[in-house]
Amino acid sequence: MTWAKKQTGFTIVELLIVVVVIAILAAIAIVSYNGITSRANVSKSVSDLRGMQKLIEMYKVDKGSYPLTSGWRYTNYALPNGGDNFIPGLVPEYAPSLPRPAAGAYIYNSNGTDYKVMRYGSIPAGEWAVASSQLTIDGAGTSNSDRYGFWSPGGAGF
Image (cartoon, rainbow, N blue to C red; front, side, top):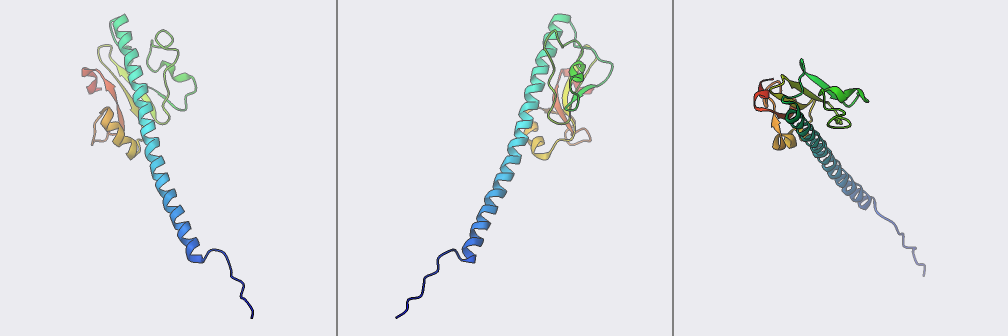
């Protein structure tokens, strides 16, 4: 009597099921990662903007007015060290340097009596949803819906 040798291994169906499960898990991980990075970008921007707001308010307490500009001033992720003067008078007296955003720009405008400091630029939908729950949105639903930040009561009109 001859015995047939039993073959071991996986069938093609079993292999396909494993590949599909791995693909589904990878898709879930990628979607979760994108949401986490959006929240992290917003958290960084919120922290940066709140820090700048505190510096601006300290400047006003000491000098009697907000740091004055003759229009919008900005810093962005591409400016290596040249962006520290976008809010005049804060560096080096109040802070060693001002933060730069991971993307987009931080912008500032003041007439001395009121001010506005914001994150400006292309804002991904996931980041926009998180930002709208934490900050004041400038012109939400209009052509200005690409920025968020803080401002004094009279600064809303800038």
